[in-house]
Length: 358
Image (tube, rainbow, N blue to C red; front, side, top):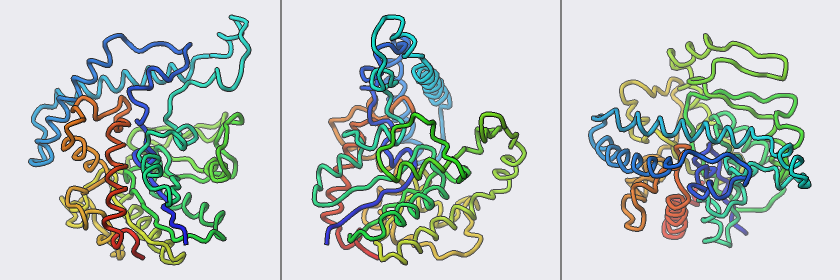
């Protein structure tokens, strides 16, 4: 029976950042350029942040906030540049130059969405697929995905492919808790979206938003709702924690019901903090039977969460300079993602009894 790994999660498991710094060469030739000197400023800042991160990992204290302020400021500058790349009217520019307008020459060229990254060779899951060609790798992750959308997408995919005869492992990356999830009755994708598969069409009904940063919800072209008070209640009363545990449990049960193997990892919260309910931040209020023995920390003590594993792989590899770890969008570069893909391939082979466990 052929083996299959289904990856579900958010932007970090999707592989956002894999095109950095190649993004500056990959964008549409008509796109505006980022400030000269930004990349060197960014690389210097990254090296400073990595040095500070090492201290934070051991002490849990930030000693120099200015380092992170510079880093965040440069990231905001990058985000604003990305926005201008997306909003440039390439079609009008091409028409003014009497150049035929096509779907290809009007693409912004930035690889941040699922439809752009799913086949991009430098994401960690595609590196993994190249290294283990006998295993089918299906990455259902979406940037900004909430816990609920992870479960919804997995359910939709299973329903679509329920007749497939595979030995399946679901590798679930539990996203940031403070995100909300909507499934609409109309697709949220624009009419000109190029779909890669039937599952991408299904994903068009799902929308997520970050309650920590979004105060208004645009439900259609005419209606926009102020959800600020809801967000305050959601965060200040920790309403997301119970839902977060519930979705881990739901994914476990889905895998159990379908005879799938199951492993999971938080994206950014160390497993030990969740287990020990550090600072009373992660109470399992419903007492759900969460399988902590199914996290990669069981076989690798450095894999406390997906985020830290990427960083530690980079720090322990002499071919990666600290300035090359982070992308401008605060994810990991293709160079670092390759290391994670290599680690996964080796671990799947050497720890087969852990990964392929129901």
